[in-house]
Length: 291
Image (cartoon, rainbow, N blue to C red; front, side):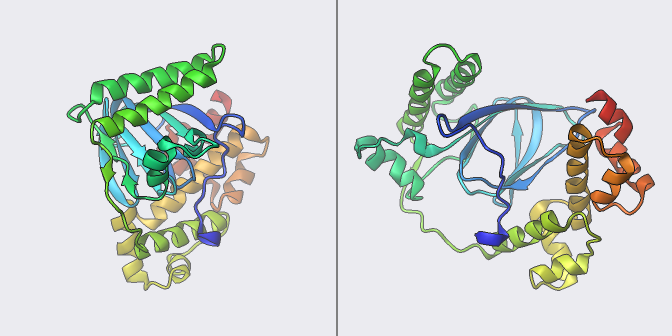
């Protein structure tokens, strides 16, 4: 994947325990999106309340309260709110290799190696109609509770719950045990090139022609291609990405709003303020003061 990566560089846990959790929430005051990215770790999303749109490897899914989403390593994924509807979810991100034994054993050979080698396919969505849903959802609740409480020897308990979760997937035949031949996905490759170009050049004046040239597509086909596969126009995506960067700068630096506006590729401060308020429902100044 080299230089066309959209890899998320954020560390999830550490080398002692490559596992962490997050609580995410969207409401009328916070309508931000999670931009398209990928990482080497597996990610499990557990919807607590509401509804939101998740995209995994360019396919779109509407998740509702109680749904479980399993995003395998290296998958492109993103999240978008639906008509400013409320949604909250818990996320766990961890390195699947933390469940491997230093000594080759039956667990590695029969279960985890086939998953890592794409010979066994993890389920993408588990809902209340899925076999074993009650046990799986209860197990996830215990995992979040265990990690967040961090009682003595919680690492041992955490691992035991993770093993139990995967045993439930196999026990309820939710894992497809067949050879999955990895295919070169040209569409995914082009999406990675396009988004990586935007992420590297967001601070500059980006034209649609520039972005379409980066992936050798005509301007007309590129616009249709982008909208079809990401659900929004290229211009909308660029603005969303710039605004997310700007929100982080407002929280972590003392730079003026004008400086941040130009540093994130907006040539007009008034236009920046307008888009920022549309997205976050407050002005940049109010956002900084509130945070």
